[in-house]
Length: 245
Image (tube, rainbow, N blue to C red; front, top):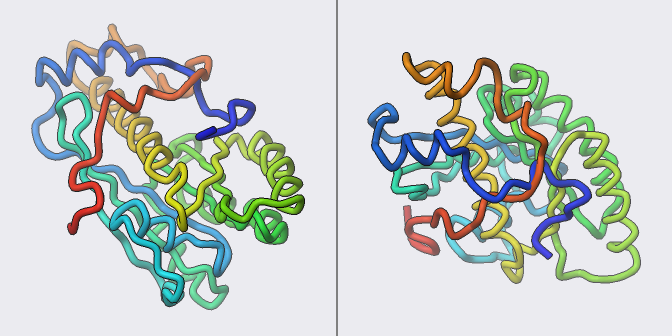
């Protein structure tokens, strides 16, 4: 199971029709599109391992903790359009919080990470999310709650996951459980993030384009939809999956 339907942002089967048309007809603004994603959470919950598994397809047991911030860029092609995710890896140590918070601004997606084997890290996710949201406009970012180390199955992880689903509902976040060690759900998760962020950026672009406003509608269309399923993963693919950037 890739994600938990009880804590899913939206259950829709396709990209918005106007977005598909704009991409297919190349009516969108020319140039490479990029969305910013910030990853926050306690020290040692596996933020860097999660990003490295997706961007480099590797897992290092002996990685060093992030100092301040770091970032990776992953390239996609979505409905024929080139698209980049800029993934910011922030430090989990308290002493680096002020530095990291400066990089929260302008995030299209906020990924709040915790360790399924350590319920305390789940308890801290609300504060991490509050810190990140404080630097962004209201309702401007998709929110994800991600439990790492899914490969460590057991009663503790099961109980933590039940609490996580409840937390996700309260946070208005979408919940996923992943394993950077085995790679389980990692590619699917980031593809989901890319699809939602891409669609939202396209809708904003179309709403600001003369001649499209009446068709798309004013305001944030994403937040107005009755949320219902993931955009099909077959609609897009990461470029250089497992390659160097």
